[in-house]
Length: 369
Image (cartoon, rainbow, N blue to C red; front, side, top):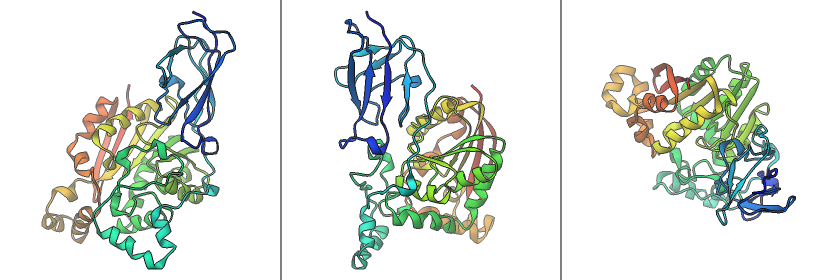
């Protein structure tokens, strides 16, 4: 069998995406079961869900190029042929950072309603009515990478996190609904990750946690979120942070890339099976000894009666009991029923500390394996 060099170049950013959402990998100097002429070029296509199966060491999602290690297998999506590589590996590059500030994102249906005051009543009706599946514009960047569980109207927000105007209001409105408790929670995360230089904020939303990490000394701060609308607001508010589109269970960063990871109000919005994948992914991209700072809603406001919370925490306890039942959180009960410590241990983490402060729960874990 002929073995020669393999080079793959992934064109995976919005400016070069094909109309059908498929990305092209140009593979030069292939080798397979039957000998091929040196210099032969072949183009493989794969969607963002990695139908072109690459070993972890070969994956680079957004821009950049790479070479495979000796004997690594690359399986093509069309005929299932396995191609063998015979070149030395080079580091996987970081994901491409789009120019979010100037990117022209498409209007979602709530944005179109805002253009007509006569139709604005539909937003109110949608907020008070039955929750529906999110409708993502066909030409929205990253549409093909969104798993189905994300397409929920979380927090009873019409069309969830996928519109221009409603997401902007949500960023500030959420903090007000939380009565300033989110700033305390973010401060706790920043203190937990103090000393970490390279930090990833997963599920960064409007970028406030990432911005605080940057302002408090971390020099290499990244924020990741599946919503380009939230990322655009985040990039405009915190231009010194690198914001990229992605999901917790598939970040596309290199192994051992970060000293710390922040996950603020993220995990209760993910089904349990995907949380396990996310923890495994966090373990992969953290350096040995790296820290994972988790902040989630406390289970107390869902487990205790309003009268016990009123006696325990006063009006504040009753308020968060009510708020927890007013917003749409389809996976929060499943999150509270799982043993987070056990899931983290299975993924290779040890618990450094855990604390509860109405209405949040903090977990700090360290990668040990």
